[in-house]
Structures are given as structure tokens and as C-alpha cells.
Length: 312
Ligand SMILES: NC(=O)c1ccc[n+]([C@@H]2O[C@H](COP(=O)([O-])OP(=O)(O)OC[C@H]3O[C@@H](n4cnc5c(N)ncnc54)[C@H](OP(=O)(O)O)[C@@H]3O)[C@@H](O)[C@H]2O)c1
Image (tube, rainbow, N blue to C red):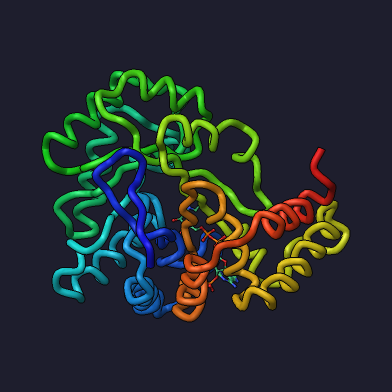
């Protein structure tokens, strides 16, 4: 798979990232008994398909996704050195650390540092290539975050830094206190979720040289399989038409509907879709999107269908 540099950083990753959120089972669903085996198999399938950028978070599967990823790394000698490993911190679930602790965000320096140490331990690795702040903490002190980043970088625990789900003004506020450039901004983008195209996030990625990473690029799978919206849902008709348009184009381009939805994202300058399937055949299928270049007319036709209206 072709690769690209992440922002102005020293990091290079595959054009598509592999997301490890679902390795320990999808949220709200009971994990199958063989979840570890299927998780390791998914990671190794992604490696074989050419993905070199892996996206994790301390909270995925309550830490289990990082453990499973670490198990995959341990199975292949030399694999760690070939991959760009990203994780996130800053979300604290209720009950952490005391039973009455609320669900919250925590960008205090000590918490950021201890979260990274936990991630490294679970994965059995010496450093993260990239650390992202998962969701903006309203109580963020940019100077305190800068102190944590410098501690982590100087200790050799994290090479580069990024953010996720920030508003552009929050990125600017944080960046102004940092002695190093942020490398990525990870936000939700798909044919269904297009707010980053309009809210300034992608504009800022261009102007500040941040690589945009697109999470849930298939709208949590709805663009891949049938039930995009239940009958009677206000979006049901638009979503049905979108699936039909994708199917018509995918037949002519020679890739699956889901891979076409990924190719649509890849046409947006710099965007790195984060693939979330745990099934090896889908992981391979979606990788084919990286070798397809949609023409402008097709891209805009799909946008128009997704909007349900012509552009102004
Ligand atoms: N920064 C953030 O706040 C944030 C939030 C959410 C996610 N993320 C990152 O983004 C990654 C991707 O998110 P996501 O898992 O929601 O992505 P997604 O690609 O939109 O959805 C993947 C889900 O769709 C299912 N699916 C159904 N049909 C599919 C098809 N034809 N092709 C592929 N998948 C299909 C998959 O099931 P199977 O496994 O059975 O294929 C899987 O459950 C995560 O792993 C995580 O790394 C980040």
C-alpha cells in the first residue's frame, strides 16, 4: 500500500490506517469467546494487506484492544519496528479510579503520562509513535498539556502528538502552547458524516499541515451493509439512494461498495480513513480503495446523493 507522511512529523504510515477499537468486540455487544484469536488474526491480516499505521486508545475494550494488538506484535519477530503505532488518552470512564468517579475528560499532566505508561505496558512496547488527545477536555490548560508532551517525548515514550474531535479553535489554543507541531487531527468523516468538510477542521488541517484521520469511515458499517437507516427514519430515503449510487459506481470501478466509500474519502486531500472491520476478507477488500482514484464528477455525484440535494 502507498504511504504518506503524517503532518510535518517524522512519521510515515500507510494511506489507510487500521483501527483497533473493535478488536475486543464492538461496544454494546457481548464479545465472542474467541475474541482474542479473531483480534490477533485481524491485526495480522491488516499487516499482510499492507496497513502500517495502527490506531488504538487506552479505553478501547477497557484496555483489551491494546493487549490483543500487543499479542499480535509478539507473534511476529521484528513487526513492531515496521509499524507506526498510535494510541489516545484523555477519556476516563465512570468508576475510574473510584466507584463514584464520573465519566469525564482528563488532560492533567500526570494523567496523560500515566495513561501512556499503561498503554505501553499493555502493548508490551517501549514507545508510541503517535499520541492523540481523544476528546477535548473543557478544563484543558494548554501549558500543562505541553509539559506532559515534553516529558513523554524527552523520556522516549512518545515520538509525535495529535488530537481528535477538537474544534479548530481548540487546536489553535493547544498548538500555541506547544513547542512541537501537532501531526494529526482524527475526526469522524464518512459520506454520511460530513461536518468536517464544513466546520473548518479540514481547512485547518490544510493550513496547519495536520493529517486528517477519518474515524468510522463506513458510518459504523452502515455504508457497507444494508440497514443504513430504519424505514421511516428521516434519512432513510437519502441513504437508500446513496447505497444504490455506490452500487452503480462500484460495479463500473470494479471495487466493492464499501471500498468505494473509502475511495471517496481518499479523494479529500490528505485524509487517512481508519478501517474498523475485524474480518480479514473485508480488511483486504477495503485496502483496494488505496489504488483507486475517483474522478471529480463521480466524487461530486456521490456527495450530491449523500446530501439529498444539489450543491448551492
Ligand atoms: N477518535 C475517535 O473518537 C474514534 C471514534 C470511533 C472510532 N475511532 C477509530 O476508527 C476506527 C474505525 O471505526 P469503525 O469501526 O466505527 O469504522 P467503520 O468502518 O465505519 O465500521 C466498522 C464496522 O462496520 C462493520 N461492517 C459491516 N459491513 C462492512 C463492510 N462491508 N466493510 C467493512 N466493515 C463493515 C464492521 O464489522 P466486521 O468487523 O464484522 O467487518 C465493523 O463492525 C476504530 O477502530 C477506531 O480506531 C476513533
